[in-house]
Every structure is written in C-alpha cells, then in structure tokens.
Image 1 (cartoon, one colour):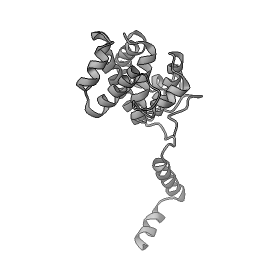
Image 2 (cartoon, helix red, strand yellow):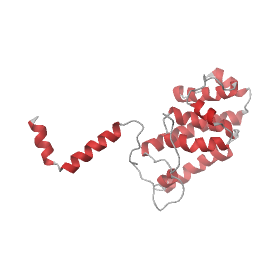
Image 3 (cartoon, helix red, strand yellow):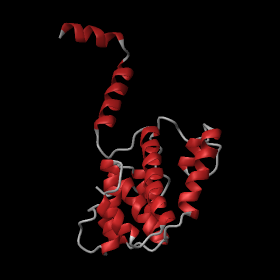
Image 4 (cartoon, helix red, strand yellow):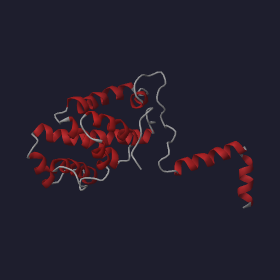
Length: 196
C-alpha cells in the first residue's frame, strides 16, 4: 500500500483524476468514447468522410467501392438495407446503424422492421426471402461463407450479379463497421446508435 501511495504522489492530482475518468469511460458499455482519429474540422460531409479526410488516397479508393454498393448495386434498396443494418447490428457499429436506419426508411423499411433486424432471421414477421437475406448475413459473419441451403434460396430469386452483390455488400459494411468502431467515429448530430 505504501508503494502505491508513493507512486501516486509523483503524479499531479489532475492526471490521476483523468486516468480514472478514462478508465471509467472505457469500461462503460454504450458510452461514447473519444475518437482515436478525430474528424477533420475543415472538411465537409458526415463524420466518416471527415475522418477519412486524414488519408485522401485511401478515402478516394474506398469511396469508389462504397458508392457502387450503396448507389449502383443490383440489389433492390430495401433488401440492400436489410443486409447493411444486420451486419452493422451484429458488429455493434452504432454509427453504421444510425446512418442506415435513416437510409433504410427511405428505401422502404418500417420502424418495426428496423427494430426486428436486431432479433435476427428467426423473428416472427419476416417474409421467407427477408429471412433468407438475414440468414445470409449471419452466415457470412459467422462462417465467412453462405451455406448451400441459403445460397439456393437466394439463387431462386437473384441472378449471378445480385448474388455477388449480396456478398460484397455484407463485406463492405463489415469493413466499414470495423473502421468506424476502431477509429471511434462519433455519431453525426441527430443520429442515434443501436437500441439497447
């Protein structure tokens, strides 16, 4: 006990208080944490693009792919958003969830459906195809591949390009969710995270 006291005496009280506060902040689930890479204040756009402004070459390369998945994919927008929201939820990516609840509503998802995404493919109320899409996300997250059964169900409705877009949509938002969480990109104003 004496050693601890002596060591603490070496540090100003404000430092010790700050360290305790940081420890509490990190250990509190669901609390916002300080960004590891803060958004560039002078950049325009939402916090993810303002964060990526630190690395323009990476940002430009990633945005090309992201724009395809979000705006030019062969998937119907509502179905694309089911995939994105499910992977965002599974990864606990509050930023992704918050942005895509808005986009999902614009694509035709209801608030009830958005909430139901958190319950997974076996929740009551999904159509058989919605259930298949959600199961595909769960399998890709868990196994890094879609099972033969789920693939056959997707292939009964989707062509080859759409099947490929399912995998690349989930993969893209798996990647971006990892980046968002690791960089601790703050939620944009007016955007809420995953319901807890």
